Length: 364
Image (spheres, rainbow, N blue to C red):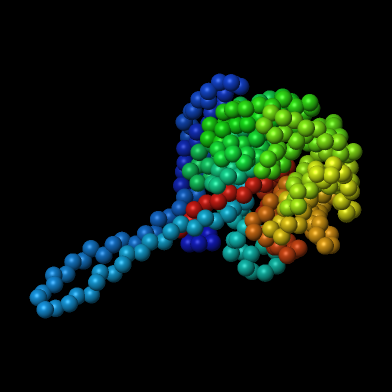
């Protein structure tokens, strides 16, 4: 089956699903199962070489053969949204032709992928998206380009997942296990663990540390290797992000207070007001910090002046693709695309949306 995309045509073809579930410490096993979804594949467009030959007579000249050309694949970014209740991922094209029509377009996902468990938090590396399944104690590795799915037991209750600064590895916050896990990005095998004093919830990665919020604690944990430093904030950190100046923004559990923490000075400040219950963060290319108002129906950007965009009830995670904001709105079951402070597209999915990630796919 074919569908029109940004650059020519993408092919949807049936793929084989590889699913593996293991107990902690054991090696994953792979079972081949009938495919339950289709996947994107690039369409080769390399032109055939000119095979016509010409005999050159003495004293005559011939034109040199025409050069063969090929179109190199382009890497295009797509949004992946976790449909938690539907147990699937929805892939959305943030540059769909419908966005050129003006106003707000109804944007259908170009692909949905069924998963063995409910996806919660997501992160993307290249064409691969990783999903945590807290209630099942597992993590899935989904290659959007090939359709391969690997699901492996990881810890007890994996909640957040983020790429490590070390290539080929990821960090996982295991809430019930009270550990920060390091897993192999290919096999999902646990290759490292650091015990924490409380349940870890959210992660933010910098070049020299992993910042962790701890459920029921006022401190932020800074983990460097096996060293753990607890820094008192005076708040109740829930979700967090590190901005371009090194300040740590964090929301507070069941609160309308949004804080910033200066790790150098060890000081906490209250961020500008404007949200009912701040939740998840993302940073725009221009450095603006955006937060979803989980207790309201907006996303808010904090720059020279706060910017509020009404997106619908219970917005969760936010991601940026260029200047386009993608918001997973749980209450309405819509993925919302925002450009220049205006909603440009709505993709109707299912209620209970949560994580958002960005993947790159090669398209010719």
